[in-house]
Image 1 (cartoon, rainbow, N blue to C red):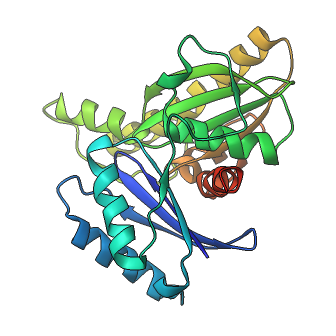
Image 2 (cartoon, rainbow, N blue to C red):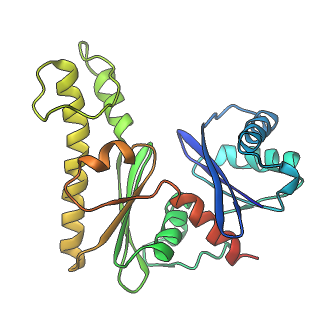
Length: 254
């Protein structure tokens, strides 16, 4: 059984894989001040809730966009299972051909998603990851990572708006009942969610124009299930995309 962990700025995704099958996926809040012992306890709880014995873990892999936590979580896995997990970074085989100015600058989360997208979806491909930031990655018809874009995430945008105003309330990001809001909460909800959906549609259209081809599109991340159904573009949702990428990269490095 392989343990895969994707550490994001807001959430950390944990999953296990056996014989190419993802056994479970659980999401934790990323806790920057948590100790290795605390993370070991959280990981153990996730495993036990899904009937997975830590003693059966014989390999592990971590991707992280929070460098200060990478060593902590690596130590947590070692204490829990006796396994020292590999970390996605320089020197790791990914199977990607990366055509950006400095390939070393490409975040591990985008690397992992691209590896999974290349394996599982038709090319050319746009990968959208909707977390603390919303990232778009573009892979051309030959399987080359061409680049992408980074925009503020849905919750970051909403928090910035509410924190910068005196009268706008905090709201739950539930699907709007209509485009044109009839009160402040409806106006906020419609504007934030449909605005994000329209931005994604617009970016997809512009990427297709620059690529000179119609790209397939897949989305993952915390906000994908809320926003993507509001988009007009044809977009698949794959919440397991990071875990799939981690498992692929793990296999390439054995």
